Length: 51
Image 1: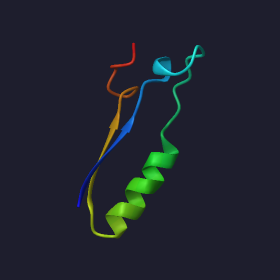
Image 2: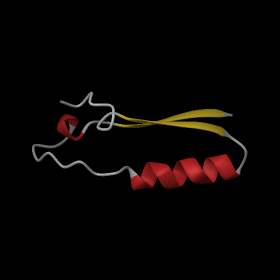
Image 3: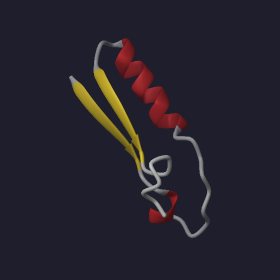
Image 4: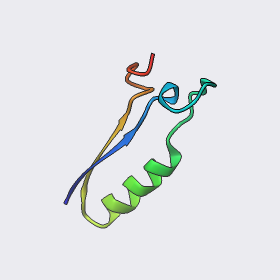
């Protein structure tokens, strides 16, 4: 199965701008990869799309 996990920009849901690593998504991605799935993680903060 192919999965796309998306971490939205902090500015989309918060007044306080914090750049946090999406550890929860990373754990889900790792578990899915271990189970044999093709996983991609899109981090909008890292891509500079949240500004």
